Amino acid sequence: MGVVQKVPVYLEKIPGGGLITTSLDAVLNWSRASSLWYLLFGTACCAIEGLMCTGASRYDYDRFGMIFRASPRQADLMIVAGTITNKMAKRVKILYEQMSEPKYVIAMGGCAIRGGPFYYDCYSVLRGVDLVIPVDVYVPGCPPRPESILEGCLKLQQKIKKQKVSDWSKTEKFIPEPK
Image (cartoon, rainbow, N blue to C red; front, side, top):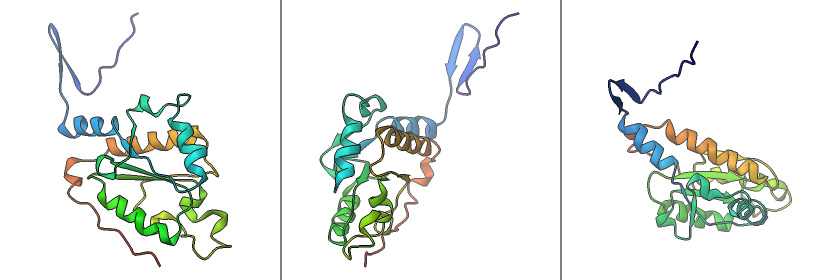
């Protein structure tokens, strides 16, 4: 009895070889998910303790095709790491608007997601970055472990691979003004 190999969906068996057939959506989504360029941007401790640690050699974002960019015009992923104050919220929105389409956002840390412990004791802290820009993936923790951040990036890659090219033109104009 031999082992039965399951042929992938995109591979069609023909005599004498194989022929790869796939959709344009699958090729474009695979290439976009495998080369996310993230904006090197942090506002508090999560940026140092979580984000920079994940980009270092031990955890290595590069194996996922993720490289940092210092300019929002070259980035398609914003990883919001740390506390967002009301004053900083306008700048975060400007950076988000300067990013190229399609663009994605990961909010990491309790402060970026819901204001963290500072929201209750300070009038100037924003209660979550999703009040300013749309967020695709949330990574909880204070600060989140590098493994959690990598898991968030993998979740975003899965989300990107499920999109359709026709959805790109239907970008939502969700950008409410902070209080």
